[in-house]
Image (cartoon, rainbow, N blue to C red):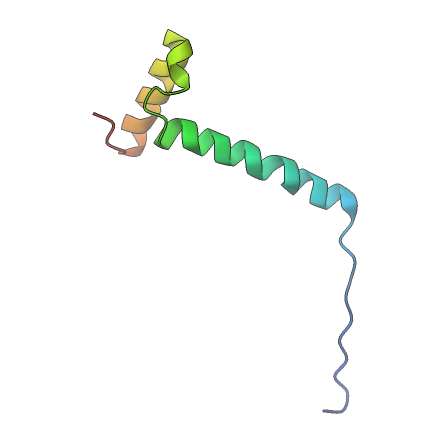
Length: 63
């Protein structure tokens, strides 16, 4: 195995921070649209209807 070398490269912190913030926000949004069914979004009529319509738009059964 001559000529093969492995070396680790550091990931810049600013790139990692974006993903660490974006992933939980996207997961919360996916939960609200796909699985919430009014448990959290019932607090406001507009938010509930927005999530309800989002489920229908994505073809997710909700009732």
